Image 1 (cartoon, rainbow over the protein chains, first blue to last red):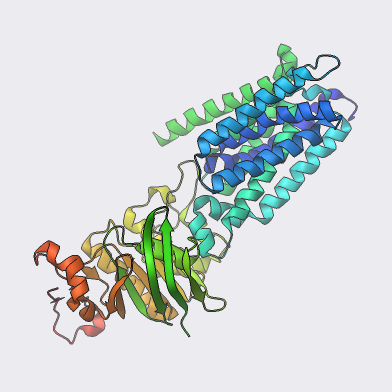
Image 2 (image 1 turned 90 degrees about the vertical axis):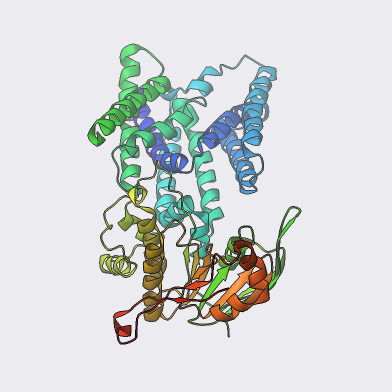
Length: 263
Length: 248
């Protein structure tokens, strides 16, 4: 059954959407949208490295995204002029990556798959990686839920309670880098932040507690992945853009409904 | 031994020396009020004591296994984060329903259990923060300007709840106050801070101290005085009810 490329694409999309929905809540609560952008853009540099050194693409992206995540963690922790530093880092890595890809010898590489995703080419190994990663993310978030939540609310409260809020930042940074690395194939570098933020923002309208918002974000993300695949097949369009379009529709409907309900 | 002590504490932010050579000890069960003008380093000192701010000089000594209940000055809750009062009390560890209810009642906010944190009034919010802080049965409660934004009856009510909580838990209380002229009447000691410890002692001793007068007394031309709120508990009903004012 897994032979069907559509089934594989659906499974890959749902797996990534679940992990992204969960982490996306923290991205929204902590105002870390920049973080998704920085790691996603830097992942293009990972693509270039994989071409130059003949490494597996996902591994190379994981290494670069992880390195950028750590760099961002250090920069924001010291609260330097973080915004500018992040901008330099993210867009510099994107430009450098595209430039390096163009310089690599051999046939010209089609960057569109990395920028916009190409979920229809997902193989069994990719599926294993995506779902393995999603399970790890879910487990880590579940085990550290209290720490992650209180550190998000107030690092001072976390510290007064004997917890280290930097541990929460580091865990989130590394998990986000991992999700970005595996999500490249599904939605592409340019749209990963959308997959993180839009389901969570849509879920806000449904939730009264953080847990419900996380569940709703996962459900909306998974729905958008499946709906986006269907829409892409029907309209003969890219799956990544179609997925984001469906998520955007859910956000618009839920936000309008939330407004109406509150009066 | 003291629950918590600072020895020769100094904190410098860039070129600004916020605290220098601050030493203090807080013993089991005592109520200490820390007063000082804006920018005197009160919050910085508190942040050093809870371990958020690393001092540039000196050190903090804590009793082994010290449990600290912290009530921050302000807690911004992002509009994107849905959070009921009940769920907030579960942070970082889940607490049984009965304990959550009891803590809220004790902090004087028993009726807000199901509300969203973002919808609370200033006074309710402070009481919910207090409720969360006492859930861990702390050895010491540290509160950073908890009555800021409350009117005088509101502040007096908050202090009464705090005193009752101290009575039950036997915890020490360290209270930072922005209001130089109203201190909690139950304070065992007042520490007057202005980058360093200017003076300390009982409220009466501090209000009479030259250093205190120099800091807070002259500017007001006698218009403001150290005011000790003497609230009327039912068990004090036998005594004539009076409010006790002392000229600073």
